[in-house]
Image (tube, rainbow, N blue to C red; front, side, top):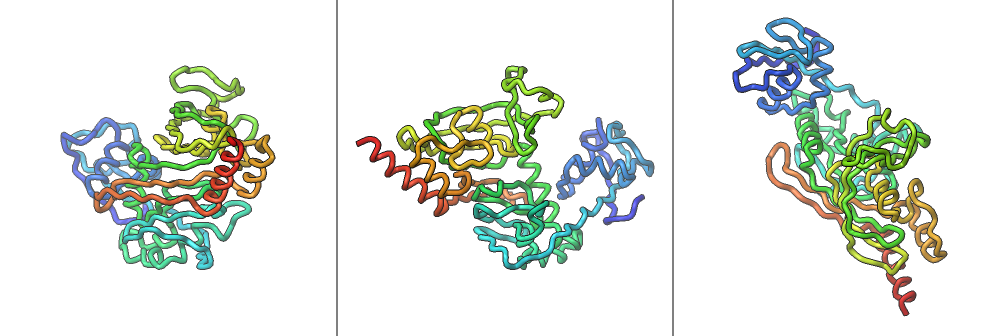
Amino acid sequence: MAAGGEALHFRVDDGDPRDRLDKLVVHLLERAGRTTSRAAVQRWIATGRILVDGEPARASVAVRSGALVDIRPEEPAPSAAAADPSVAIPVVYEDEHLLVIDKPAGLVVHPARGHESGTLVNGLLALPGFALAPADPRDPMGHVRPGIVHRLDRGTSGLLVVAKDEPTREGLKARFARHEIEREYAAIVAGEARDATYDTLHGRHPTDRLRYTSWMRSDAGRSDAGAPGARATAPRRAVTHVRVLERLGDAATVVACSLETGRTHQIRVHLAERGRTPVLGDPLYGKPPKKPAVRAIAEELGRQALHARVLGFIHPATREPMRWESALPADMRKALDQLRRLATRSSI
């Protein structure tokens, strides 16, 4: 068996899912308190890290009851990011397994081209909680793999959960995949929004690689945008529930957006393409407002008026329900106050 982490051994029971080896291994590991993604298990199978009765097997093979399954988990690759204690991270909750932060707008989550330093990951690596991660004997290099489970765009502010160890990370990822995470965003949009549910297919734009689009409704089976090659990029279902919170004349609306799925730019795409009410200040999916006063407010804001205000889930380790709320940041409150004054003057 390939070298790596400590080997785990399981005897397959009649009640275990035995139709596919990859499904079986995910189940066995979860039963042992080690939540792992199916994709990771498939990689381990392909590299000979999982044996059935001492022999390699395919991910799709059915496994007999009574078989012995040997698993040697692969250590995740360490991050090359460097710790940067100058990155300010507003922590709203922390325990030995995870932390929740209130990300400010402008903070990039992961190092990438053009943002090799000064990101959330760089800041996390400088936090004491992550530096103590080697105390977990199952994950001695955990301090260089901060567990980003979901992301917020650079220009979006609000609540974000980060895992400190692999079981917590995989547990949170599984809850996201099963749509068991409560997420609600507040947005100021241009125009008159309405209560709605947008249920579409969602994927990368066929001609603009920076953008995403909703090509077709998931219940219609046809292209809405007429984009050539849309099916070839395998769009995925995206569902956003929009609720009006406050109307600001005909210039803008404050809405709450709750997610069933978490696709890249999902809210921004749905509000712009489906609602025809793009997020105010959105540089990618919106246009400068026609009214000069509203346009000036958007320019002063300098980013999309989108804030992750609610985050809730069952804690993967303690099984306790947890929920946080975040108030609008100062820049969005200022824009909202300006729009309210503008709406009042327009109604006189």
